Image (cartoon, rainbow, N blue to C red; front, side, top):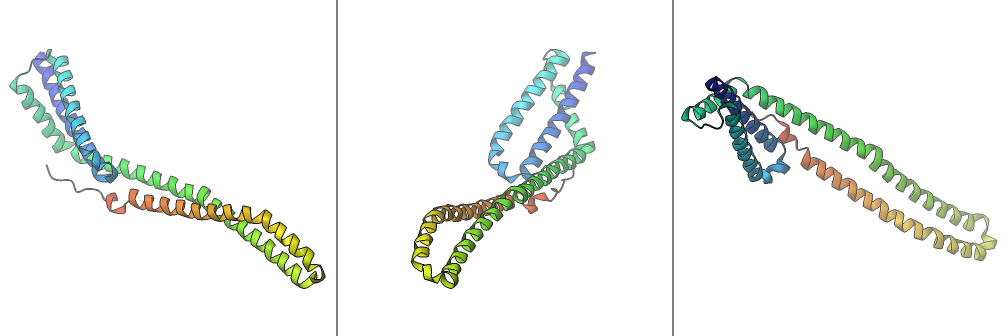
Amino acid sequence: MTQYLTLIAMSISGAILGAVYDVYRVVLKQWRFLRFLNPVFDLMFWIFALVLVFWALMWANNGDVRLYVFVILLLGLLVYRLLFRKIVVSGTVGVILGMKALGLLIYRMFLLLVVQPLLLLGRLLLALLRALDRVAQVIETVILWPFRPILRLLHKGLKRVFVPIEEPLVRYWKHMKKVKGFLVSLSNWFFNRKDDEEPKDPKG
């Protein structure tokens, strides 16, 4: 009975290790911003492998390590690579591409519903302030020229009111354009279309 439990536990452990390894390698290949963590993922994989094999041995035969244990582990890994590897790799790629598509959709909705309205609002406010200033100038020049001295004083007063408002709006609009440019650059880097191609699956 112990031999059968060991056979089942080690073969399943080998298949799990193969699947986990393929998943994290596909993740690193698809998401390049995680590639600098490659040594960390390698270390975590080997720690996981040791813990899994130790737990399986303790469950199957109370931790009795024999040569055939490793042979069965390799056989489980081989069966996984022959029968299930393509399914796991393609499924992982599909999940990652789906997450990328969702992230890209959220990013575009954020630009459309938040950034673009703020930019439009800034432009409208600036246009309104400049239009009011031009109307005041036209009225001063054409219609109310006898009251030009009074209107000049009024115009100066209005400038004192509107200029402190216009300058922050101009800075705000320029800042929002920079934010939009940064978001576009970040999106082009994060959602790199070259990385969306499914990696070629090596035979074996």
